[in-house]
Amino acid sequence: MSVGLINGLPGHPLFVHGSVVLVPLTALALVVCAVWPATARRFGWLLPVLGLVALALVVLTTESGEWLEERVKETPLVESHAEMGEGLTPWVIALLVLTAVVWWLGRAARRRPYGEDVVDGPTGGRAPAGARLAGSVPLRVVVLVLALAVGVGAVVQAYRIGDSGAKAVWKGRFSTGEPTEKD
Image 1 (cartoon, helix red, strand yellow):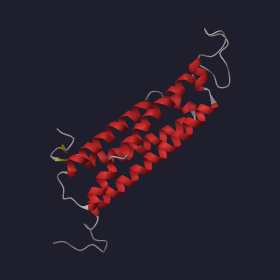
Image 2 (cartoon, one colour; image 1 turned 180 degrees about the horizontal axis):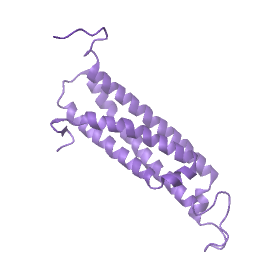
Image 3 (cartoon, one colour; image 1 turned 135 degrees about the vertical axis):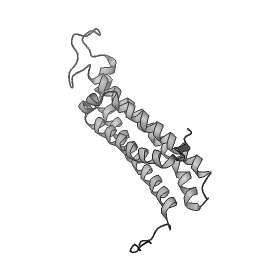
Image 4 (cartoon, helix red, strand yellow; image 1 turned 90 degrees about the vertical axis):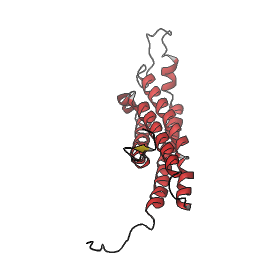
C-alpha cells in the first residue's frame, strides 16, 4: 500500500478528512493548555503526541496529494490547491514544538506549586531551575501568544487549503437548481 492508494482508491481524501479534524483539535488543545496550566498537566504526554500525530497526518496528506496531482487533469484550481497544500506543514511543525513546550512547562510546574518556592529541595531551599523557569510569568505569556498565533494560523491555513481543494474538486460539477428525477 502506498500513500497514494488505499483499497484501490486515492488516499488523499481520507487523509484530508483526518487533517481537517486533527489540526484544529490540536490547535484548540494547545491554546487551552497554554491558558490553563492545570489542563496541560491533566493532558500530560497526550498533548505532544497529538501534535506529532497531526504532523504525521499532514505529511501523509501532502504526499498523497502530490501523488494524486500527477494523476488528475491539470487545472488552475488544482494547481492553486497543490501550491497551498505545502504551506500547512510549517504551521503544524510549530504546533508540535509548542505542544512539547507547553507539556514541558506543565510538567516542570508540578515540581513547584504556583507562587511558591520549594524550601526543602536539594538546591538549598530554591525550586529547581526548570521549575522556576516554568513558573515565569513572562515566559508563560510569550508561550500563550505564540500558541494563539500558531493555533489560529494553522487553522486558517487548513481552512484555506481545504476550501481550495473543495473548489478544485466540485466547482462546476453539480447543479444548484432543483434535483431532476432520474430514470
